[in-house]
Length: 212
Length: 219
Ligand SMILES: Nc1ncnc2c1ncn2[C@@H]1O[C@H](COP(=O)(O)OP(=O)(O)OP(=O)(O)O)[C@@H](O)[C@H]1O
Ligand SMILES: [Mg+2]
Image (cartoon, rainbow over all chains, first blue to last red; front, side):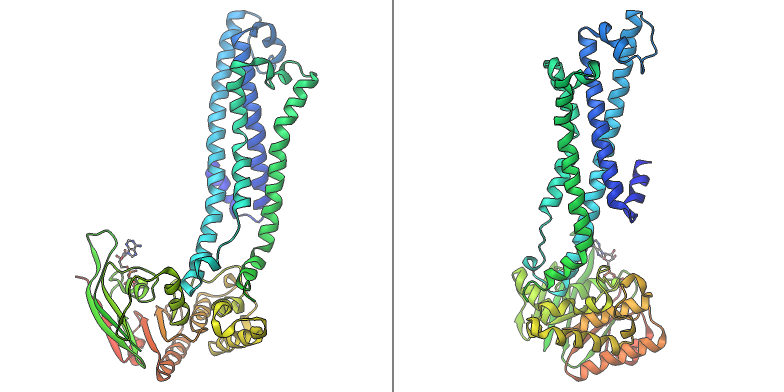
């Protein structure tokens, strides 16, 4: 489903916007999943029975029986792990699709120029910035996972606090610190993509006229 | 100009040979047709001749000089100045208009360098489009053309640089009889200017124009 969905998106005219939405969604959900996992772990590890009913009661279906809560917490952890893995696969795929599509198109155009007699140095094109940002932006959601691991060692400094104490100023700040770079990078990437797409023809022609 | 092929072999997997010990001499002013069943290696031969693919063994001599494993840049220069290639699959750039596609090789051709030659480039491209009756589509994009029209754009592009050797892979595969005759007779006329024309074709009509017919056979 992911594959068909993404392939259709990529063929679409609204490709860029949808790619952006997809990546953004990936980032946010991944981050959120990571946070949930982190809070789940920290809850399970220590004082879960104090917090669990308060914080996760929306998700959990258990009563106040500690034993039941424990098994529910485990179940949630398992579900989260599955979600995280699925999302990782999704991200890898969307990354691959985006990069390989671009690379293939560019590769074809370049091979054609080479066949006509252009030299390699006459057809090079600076996409490193675009590709770099794409890679970094897409790698960032891994932060959520890292955060979960981090939470195992230093529970206090994870965004899990946002979930546990919704109004904690520090925790909110931390959340912003983590989320803002995602969004910023994604925005930059989208702007570059858009400008690039709009100018693709111009830039090809400009390259051809470099010597003029 | 004389292109000698000596014991040319090509294998993609070190086991099965697509071409084995092929020898032939192509000379200026002649029209050559390469024929044979599908998959016999016609395109492969043409790609090697046009320096788009590497031979596995054998020798190619141009005017008596062995074509050694040159640097990429020299090969690029030869592709630009000596060979004009018509691809079986057209390979037009979808982001450029018909006219721009035909102008692509001109941008790096030494004779057309510089802003002052802008008009000269346009003139040359338009001339070719007119020759193949696609001048009315000059501002269209390749995906707005029929297969036959795209093919003619590909031919115009291959001829833009006025190459010594024209290598055409099924140049009339998508054309009706009238256009086919127009293309073949245009290529034939080029041989009268001293060019070498090598055409791969399944089309029997090519026999009316070719001076030599090379038939490749499966081993
Ligand atoms: N890049 C490649 N890797 C492996 N095998 C290849 C490659 N290119 C061509 N071949 C094989 O080499 C053989 C000759 O291919 P070629 O394209 O030269 O045939 P052709 O005579 O031009 O056929 P057609 O008339 O169908 O165009 C085929 O069997 C093909 O599968
Ligand atoms: Mg072929």
